[in-house]
Amino acid sequence: MKICTDFRLTESRHLSPAYGLLTLQSEEPLPEIHAGQFAQVRADGSKTTFLRRPISICSADPETRTIRLLIRRAGNGTAALIDTPAGHLINIMLPLGRPFDIQAPDQSTDRPLLIGGGVGVAPLLFLGHEMRQAGICPEFLIGARSASDLLLLDEFKALGDVHITTDDGSLGHRGVVTAHPRLQRPVSQIFCCGPAPMMKAVAAAAAKLGASCQVSLENMMACGIGACLCCVEKTVRGNVCVCTEGPVFNINQLTWLD
Amino acid sequence: MARLSVNIGSLHLKNPVLTASGTFGYGEEFADFVDLSRLGGFVVKGTTLHSREGNDYPRMAETPSGMLNAVGLQNKGVGYFIDNIYPRIKDCGSEIIVNVSGASPADYVAVAERLTPLQGIRAIELNISCPNVKQGGMAFGTTCAGAASVVSAVRRAWNKTLIVKLSPNVTDIVEIARAAEDEGADSVSLINTLMGMAVDVERRRPMLSTITGGLSGPAVRPVAVRMVWQVAKAVKIPVIGLGGITCGRDALEFLMAGATAVQIGTANFLDPAATMRVIDEIEEYCTRHKISDIREIIGII
Image (cartoon, rainbow over all chains, first blue to last red; front, side, top):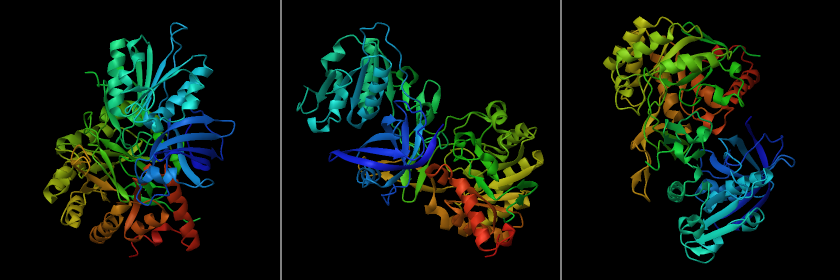
């Protein structure tokens, strides 16, 4: 069941000049939402924005009917969303797409590795929560340009061990996530969301380690519900819509490693 | 409440609100937001004889008050539609119109013949105006002879309602409409997308993999209204108007300019319940203006 309704912006936190965290409350009950699913958000505050903006859901609480969206200032639409004053209404359609597939690891000592970059950490926070609820302990590897681009670190640390890389070395290991020593050690499950070049590098690293790997894509889309066929990704089954068949794909379905 | 029903050829619509091909999937994608049985009807995605993968990503670019697309008729073919999709949607309580495309007149005829036995398909819309395929599509819709060749061939094979969707990418859309009417079309729908292009100046590359694409959304509406008005004045068959309709007021523009019915397209991406809102707003308008039958205002300009 999907809904399309006005949410009241109850809190807007500017995490840095580039990132905002929006807490939104629905008037109607929330449908079941899982980590990896996304929302199509209307940016009425921007005169130049025509289409909705697809945003990963960072957390969802059915009891308070609230969701959180972590948004990167990428253009006029996302900027207008980040700068919306608290108390205003924002029209949101959700939940869209298929969530991450959570499987208990074969061995109880084996911890899934959740790898995120930039704003891509949003669904991994949600995923970490769902894993903890399922009795699974996740481990995180988070990459950013600089220490100031590392978002919601305290929340990640509350869920599991956090490994960090920064391009400038201002926190954690200097360099990209795939160069982190954690990826030199065995891991059986990887979940990844971030910029496409990063996800492709992680997918290649996962293949080398023999780990399963799920990635969350962010192809440009119009409708978000499988009608316009604009957001397609090439898969082993041909072109499929990222909005309905994804955004989460097992890399064995994609043609990245061919 | 005003009477909203209209006829397109032998097709009876409970109201003049349809959806545009390629913007409403097969209806079921919108089931959480729309009561399909309230629609006059919906036009399903462009269907070809064989399955098509469509064009490479990226296929879409946002533009001022609109968007460019270059999907390229991705679909699983008419056989898949008949076996897998039609059985799921045939009892939705609304008219289902299949948009038919092909690379040759024989292709169009073959698709029409496959659809003929389906009781629930009482109309097809011939797409002779897709700007995003290399063969067929718009090539047929930009000359009178090309349009006539497809329409006459399909007319001989299809005895139910035949709608021909016209391209605006022509010098004179009226003469193409007349050619379709002369070959026996029951209706023309217009406009398909306007050819357009957008450039990513930072990356110095076109926004679309195909370089050019089709422009839709409110940006094209005044062009569409003008073409509907010109065509409606020139032909006797009913005209279906589309192009950037987002609300009841927009739909009424087309009706007053001469359209007997309208299609809602890109607006479905902005508001999945746009069709319901358009129907509600047309009803409100009729009540407010004491109109008892929608036909009182069709073509009053």
